[in-house]
Image: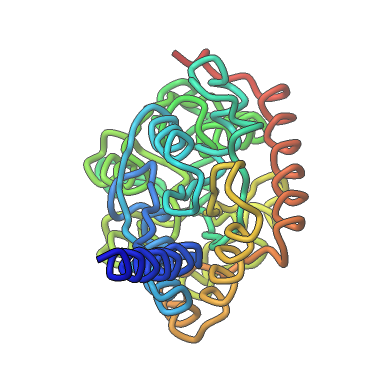
Length: 327
């Protein structure tokens, strides 16, 4: 009887050890990525495309959870409060993961700078200065500027919320152009402000190329200009704001984040899988159709350095461009 018991215990130890070793190899179960916007936003589009390819790289499903609201704080805190084992990540953009920690620092229940780390940038999307076709006469950039200057405080523009990146970008542009515009904030993400334009609730906005392509193609919005280094092949007649003399604007990027306490080897595995996915033919082709550019960071150290530069840019903008006080 003792021999049987000892043999059973030995077998159990061996099996238990094998299971533990199997679970030690990351990843051994699906990975959740929390998105701070609703479905259809540029950030959501990017992670769904990249996540589908990461599934092949890691051998596990990437499960996307949309958790919009509170300037991205809800999504970020859900990630940070989860076990830092690489199974709960977050995808964000300059508004949620750079501006929010600067201007909404007191609303966080975590220490963002110490508890969140960037894994890599993923996609960059041009921003389009678009106008509604509903009861709004300007057909091009010049006509828009002339109308806005002749009617200070009457032209309405939409953003994804007070203190968001396109809120600051639009105010910085208006300041440069000598315009006084009325701000219509919407916390629903890029798709929501595109709807604001289509309905005529707002008349102009900086919208991302990915989530606005369909309504522009359908003739529901007019493209006045693009915030990009070069003219977009899809809208060859629309000038870049840079060629018009405004060189301060930046495109919209999406990046992958993890809890800072995640083991280095796990962060490295996630980074390598993200970069491999971004370089793959399926992702490159899907991005091309959505007018998204793949922009992976070469390493975790490169991601950290790039993030620091981005924080410095937006921090300076918050100091030089005054917007209504966030609530």
